[in-house]
Length: 75
Image 1 (cartoon, rainbow, N blue to C red):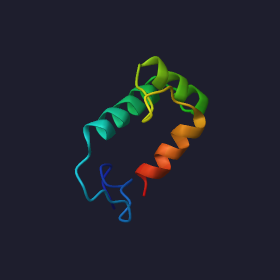
Image 2 (image 1 turned 135 degrees about the horizontal axis):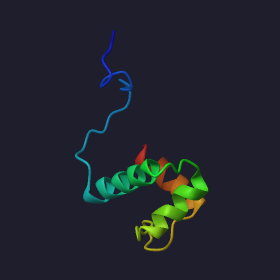
Image 3 (image 1 turned 30 degrees about the horizontal axis):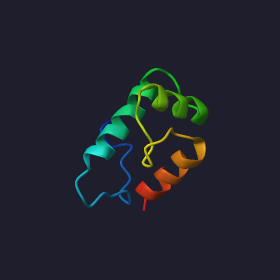
Image 4 (image 1 turned 180 degrees about the horizontal axis):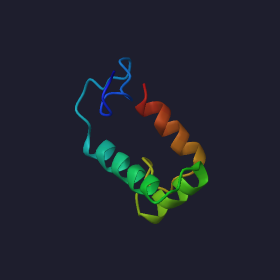
């Protein structure tokens, strides 16, 4: 039986390169928002903007550019 630290690992999820500072900041910000109990996309986008974290183009996050960025990072 897997322990609690490995039960959510997916053997097909890999990240071959070290995480960039941008990826670390983005993931930390997303976790901060989730930690506040916000789990919907509109709330997540609004919260990222409220934290002052800009989208890759330097502008505000939108649902569309957030989805596009998650797709790009998942490639």
